[in-house]
Length: 439
Ligand code: UD1
Image 1 (cartoon, rainbow, N blue to C red):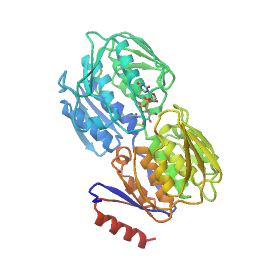
Image 2: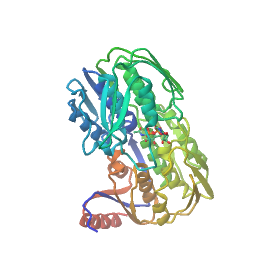
Image 3: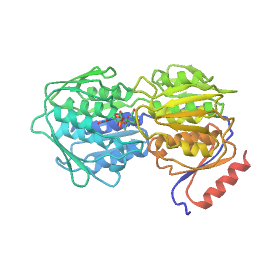
Image 4: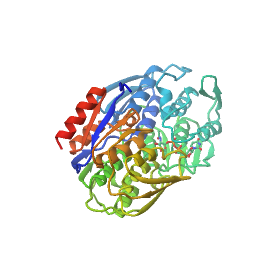
């Protein structure tokens, strides 16, 4: 097989030590970047993670007429003034990201018209947007799925509404909140999601002049305003990137200071790591994770925030596979989120999937293997497993991992991990030799 796509080559067995700085939250950024076009003024957003998902969304925003200017690697100035009304949002990339759906709420609120290619994203089960659509319709929009797989949402007048979400949905909560911000009258969103990035998007909209209260609780109240104005805003740190480095530290029995985090957002993750026998010390805006010796098994069930995040499920399974005893990991948000299990099994893990649970019997260690990322967080789990394994692993399809991890290989390398990004068969062989010799 000729490899022209990028891969990671990882040699396991090094304890990770040192400091790592966490980037801005990808999922907050996707909401905020979409919301930024809701005003005709300039908006400056700081701490934008430099990952492919945010760059894809920014391309789409540019393609419909907004200006996007990078002031530095993490600061973007956006001006939505030039956006052509009734311009469809569709390009070869936008369908690949899930968060394209935020442009429906943003443009519907701003122009009372949105025509957006239906979202893709990671293949982790069916991911309907019926709740988003229900919400837009309550606000007075008519929606239609048109040939070619786009959704049109349109209204003569938008108005406030009482909206109850049957399922707790991050995407629907943010999307409805954005459209409601510019819908005259009062909107109440009940059974709203409470994730930190919902609070961040609400805070950003409020900085632009919106009137949103209750974000972070399960009832969000929005009083529609006539228009939004320019703002400067800095995105919160990425809870999942932080959690991934925490799990990676435990996997390698390392000692790492994880900087630029909000420890409160990490509580569900920290408490599981502590149950497993790791030490987690919280500071104001960093956490230190340390682990040595044997790890203990535990039970995990993914739930909406403040429960254990589904986006950390795979990474935790990777380390539970190295613990003493049997663990059960139950996925209650998505249907198809155990696709990494096949690869972990080939590394020597003992994991059986039954329905929406993985039953994990710990083994002493993993062995390096040829691996393939099936989605973003599954890919991160394989990186963690490979860093702890005996020998060398390669991971294909790292394009999924690059959706959400900025400079992943560089950050791991700075902690002493042996991880390289390569593109050709020749580079792979060279990397394997190099990694083998400096061990
Ligand atoms: C977002 C995150 C994703 C994370 C997930 C859960 C982004 C871009 N992605 O995804 O990383 O894993 O939250 O924390 O922020 N549902 C419906 N109908 C809808 C919408 C959702 O039935 O209209 C269901 C989904 O199938 C799922 C559950 O609700 O079972 C939660 O999904 P949701 O919170 O909406 O996830 P996403 O916004 O897709």
